[in-house]
Image 1 (tube, helix red, strand yellow):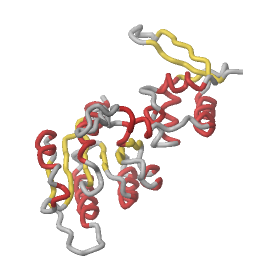
Image 2 (tube, one colour; image 1 turned 60 degrees about the vertical axis):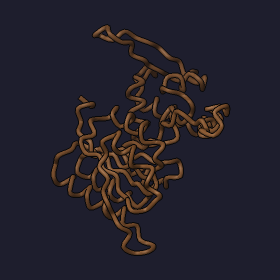
Image 3 (cartoon, one colour; image 1 turned 135 degrees about the horizontal axis):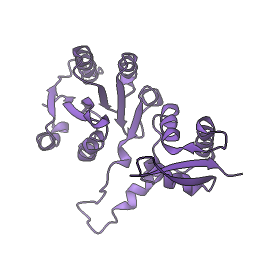
Length: 247
């Protein structure tokens, strides 16, 4: 089962904000069991002090990495070295690399060459080369559920969150339409599960939550471009959703 996949979670402490960690770990649990959880940074610096309590609560091991040379990112090098050690140990089935840094692009590509999956997690500022090097890329902004200002509790919680929701552009609709065509039978119907899987391969950072929807079905309904048909499965436990383009 997917949930039984053993994952190595490597976090770049230099550019992943600590406020995201709880939701991030909950998200990772959907894709497998994080058997290795490490975060990298120079823990002698005050910038990382807010992480200490969070690490204990989430059983994440801090990996000390001093900045030996000004202008060089020693944290990235340490993460890459550890990732390769873990890869060759064959103790995991996949990796989760939490960073908004394009320096991990080649690492993600190398891991995937061995047949292991790579989930990337980072902020929306993440460069595209790292995003497309992953099997799936998840934006931290869509995971963060609470945006209350502790100094102003009366401030609406969703005010800042709404700014992170993307608009469904004609380009997005075209991507869905083309993918439905790729998966469709002779009558034009395509199983939604196949459509979602193929979209993910074409565009690793595609996620219904980017557009303010929890699932792909309501996103597709909102476009008004598709017919949706719910069919009984052979096992009878759940409905199977099929879609096709409207004439």
